[in-house]
Length: 360
Image (tube, rainbow, N blue to C red; front, side, top):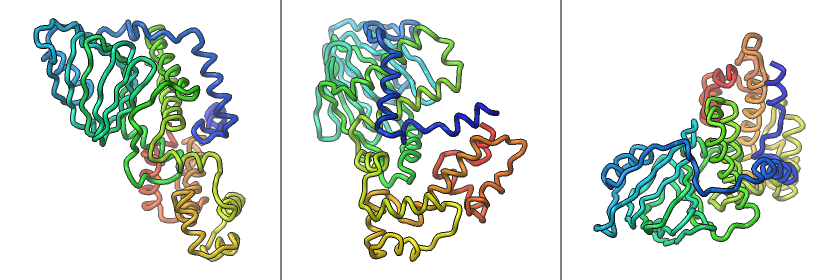
């Protein structure tokens, strides 16, 4: 019980300060020092070895999604290998075809894909953009994009499949607001910066842990923590359509009147607020306050109040003893008098019911 309370008070990596995130990434770098070889990843996970392209297509379709797979060199004997380690919300994959192939999945729909070439190259068409990846670069493919690719005969890749609902849910928690449009990444990452190299190093670490400590997969708490560290690294280091909003929220960037109102709300979160009260505090017009909150916070002022109160409810439920705490009491404490509507808002925000948080 005490451990749960302590964990609930720890600052989430996603909303940590720049210094806290740097320290966390430094700790990860220390953990993975000496484990950067991706020569033969996922050696324990021999899932498929075949020369039959149709057998491969059916197998990979089951692991990823349905797609077309056509040989570019028809006379060549393929040397196909797929290895796969499955976590609750993520899977790590090693894939090679051993021949030049054209792959057309259309769109992924329900997952994101990180691709790290280990050898050879891949030409990928993402909507109307064409990119070419090779060792030292990477691709991040989004669910809503139209995708097709050609792998050359020497192409081998370490690939990370990330469940779309899980990553988008994590982003919602980081932003403190619902997504207005799907999360979409810029698909190509060129020669790695120091920050992006940390993502590759972390994926290397995960792959090596799956090989060296297979029992880790049975530790649900450890798996969840590793997955969320991956989500945080992706969202904080790769370019996407929420990058500016996320940076502004984490760094506290915004006009002085927005900061003034946010500070006022945080200091009195259990109290009742009116919009006119917040306008008075801001010392700007209601229209300016509203538009500034929409731009820099992603919510109206009163929606921000409700969002922060939902955060407090979740913190209390996560740290509480289910035998001694009633959800209704915690909800009422933070101003949610209509319990049915509260449950709907809570589920929409966190992807789980209050009762699920309480008994986790």
